[in-house]
Amino acid sequence: MTDATPSDSTVSTDAPDYDDMTRDIADVPAVEVITTVAVHLLSAAAVNLGLDKPDSEHKDLDEARKLINALAGLVTASATEISSFHAAPLRDGLKSLQLAFREASLVQDEPGQGPGEKFTGPVYA
Image (tube, rainbow, N blue to C red; front, side, top):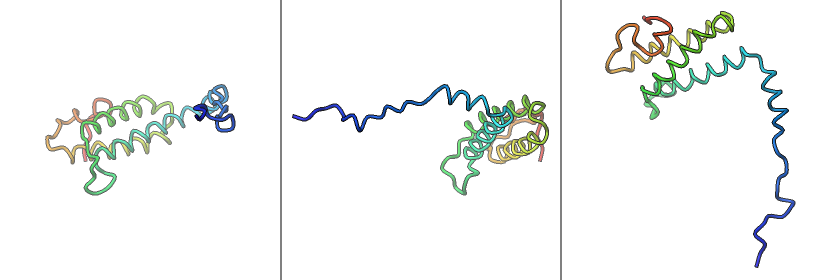
């Protein structure tokens, strides 16, 4: 009969130091957190629009709409906090996603009704 408990040498006693992790997060500037989240939203929306590669199997316009709405809200709300230096490229990326969404949609939204347009206003090519 074998012992079912692992030996002391294989059991890890290294638990994460949550105090250190909290301090590390507190040291990250807000602008970096905001832009990182925005880039994740932008990237996820692009994948759901099928922009990651030709004939993408990940195309899901409903998911893309949600992500673009979230991105538009974040960029619009934080623009004055992160400065135009950081906000301008995010706005450009957002507009590109909004136009790509319009192009990918079989049924076109009315101007001002597309994803994120309640925050950005109507987007035209």
